[in-house]
Length: 369
Ligand code: 5GP
Image (cartoon, rainbow, N blue to C red):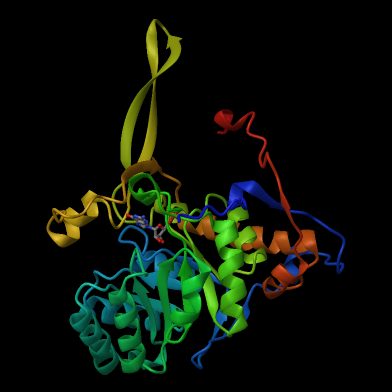
């Protein structure tokens, strides 16, 4: 019989972190944003657990380099060639940008070729000093995903492997036999249509709590992927015990994201000298990796058995990525001071989460300049 779980599953907009008296932190400058991650399969990395999504639009070299330079983690999308990645390693070396926290994405489709690509990176570019792999599949519940994951672990026993996406706790232990980090989140992404097209998905807050609990019981880690609207949502995910957070849309309107700035004119209601005032607004294109656009661009079109589970959007242009990265580090440090956490590692220990009906005051939002 079909079961209905009647417990309410919560999303980021359903909760807030309640400020409280704790250890007296005088300034957000005193907060330690770096954390040492000791991974299940033996490796250690240090950084602030924030990733850019491994999507074509935001998983590019420019964005990755900026996150790495700020002590964060980064992915690059799966469509780069070995030579392009090799050149990127070299440019990071020349600019003293550490690549220890860089994850190379591979897909499931051509596993042999993908593994070959990783091996070439190793032999040609001494990639073994970093060697972090992100195995990306929109749906990690299929047997093929598990097969590729176990094979990649076998081929690269010393790598840090992040695998996903999943949206329930039951699969975590199985994946952690081979993976170090499980990427959690199905249907939450801002360019995603999975919930509309399939009805499947799990709200992020409940998902993160469930998966973190299971993964941490065997020294695994998780990454909350998708649905980050504001920096506050990154703080919430970290407070809920997610080790890493991945965001796409948050970075997609920046200069550094793929594509040109698109200018559009809009008529306003204002009339000056008998003429309607025209307002100019700027946008950037952002598309899901399962969108028709991405399928046309990278896979020669949509297969006839598939439906598009991603969309193509024009989102507001937001300027330089540096400002957003500054907001992220500033927001997390400030969150720590509100709840008395001296380091990002302690956020989950110090956090009290409250369920709310109304999260934000939006009364003047449309007047923002
Ligand atoms: P965002 O930060 O924009 O809310 O979400 C980014 C995440 O959305 C990605 O890391 C990935 O997990 C997911 N995603 C990217 N493209 C697609 C797509 O075409 N369909 C679906 N269902 N999810 C996508």
